[in-house]
Image 1 (cartoon, rainbow, N blue to C red):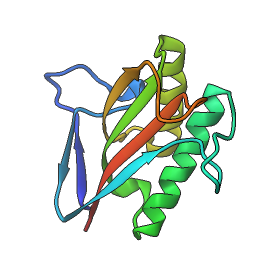
Image 2 (image 1 turned 45 degrees about the horizontal axis):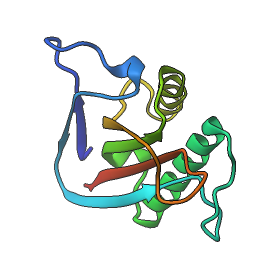
Image 3 (image 1 turned 180 degrees about the vertical axis):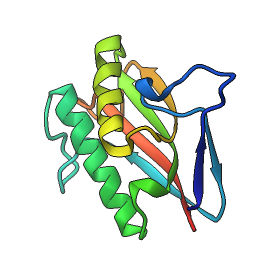
Image 4 (image 1 turned 180 degrees about the horizontal axis):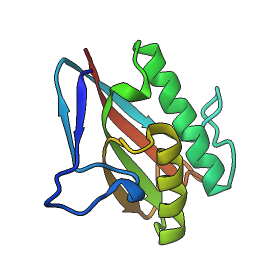
Length: 131
């Protein structure tokens, strides 16, 4: 495997928050641009935050597949959240848990006032490693 996830015992357990502390990478890095809840024309698909998270993650998987990779090759994600709060964190952590289980990638969550297009509430980018 090209990504090794590490959560040192000397730091808090971050998995329930949807991230890991360290992702060690070997191999070629692949950078995935920010993915949001877009359809094939780039329109936001839903005003619902949870639906946007789900669609954004589906779009992330599609971008990874286009590079010949899967979510298991992801070392780091950055999530951008409009008007971040704990309810939104719970949605994100739940979605991350469904995909990565107890081995989520390193993550930085960034609360923002707005994203690129009207109606966007969530965006995710990724760094993956090709073995």
